[in-house]
Length: 87
Image (tube, one colour):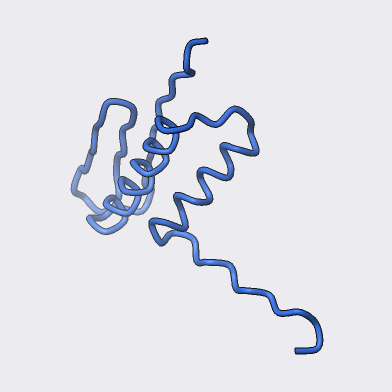
């Protein structure tokens, strides 16, 4: 069975007058300030690594890959640990 191919396009809307583009084999990230562009490029690269390592087969798996990439790159804060009621 042939592995599904993917290509990711990241566009950062918050930006300045400087054109920033990061290209790789399976993704392109464009736009942003230095900080936001670097964050987006790291985020997209993390998604790409996971897709290559173990391609998600379902929409739920794809969402999980994106959530984990956001956590790893600091774009999504870790969920607070819940404590049992009464503590």
